[in-house]
Length: 145
Length: 162
Image (cartoon, rainbow over all chains, first blue to last red; front, side, top):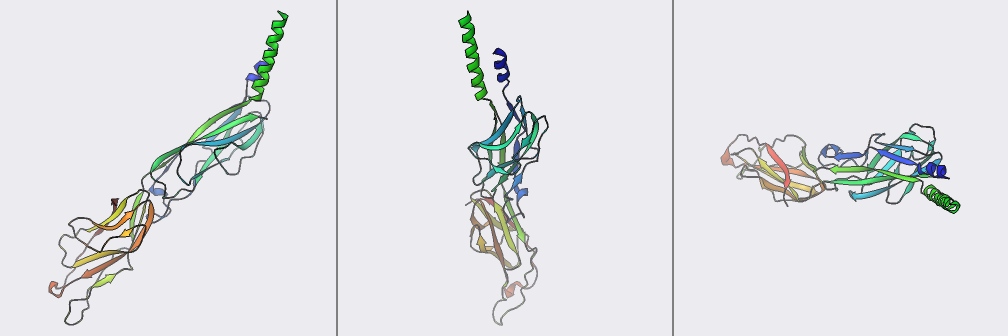
């Protein structure tokens, strides 16, 4: 019985590395003075890396956002860009999906996957957004299924 | 002793089930968007030549007017901005005026007689907007001023102000 307890304590782990810092300035105007800002911005395709470890079964990764201060009218998206490596499988999450306040499924898989690439994107940027530093947190939760 | 062992075993089972039910883990990353101040202004249309060469007999020469060659465009993400105008020509022989026409994203000020005595308001009430206008230049001369040329470098500035 004690051995059983020890195995279950080795609970599934998710490790997220990286962050995205985007600077928007006059160089982002579509055509200089008299034009608006480009509405859409994308991070590098491997901006964020996700590791799933310490599991011997299948799992689902869900995602939600928590906003500290966010520009009005701007929507945040993510998509999975790579499968990562490891003994398990992975599927889903390769289409852009909006990150909202409620948890929603991102992708699923099984066993270990290391360095699953995630790309971030913003839409809705305009000159109406006043100068400031805006930020939010993207929270990933892995749950064994 | 046997009861104690069974008790510990049961507690272990409960603990295992509990941990199994909570087999999830969370991590996060931040997203930061830094929007810097954007205040861009540009003249479209290039340089302009106004020629005064007509008159009605018995009257002063006709004004030379152009409102199609040059436009002014601006973009700002800050509130409470205005555009001022001034010339670098300290002592012009002739009179040169400019007026903002068909203004979007602001309010036209009155026609400005260009001088070096200080920047004059040209468009006011600009804030977090894309705007533009036609530049109407009017050159005037009197017969007594004779002939000659004035060369102005006209500067428009997007600056703080109501």
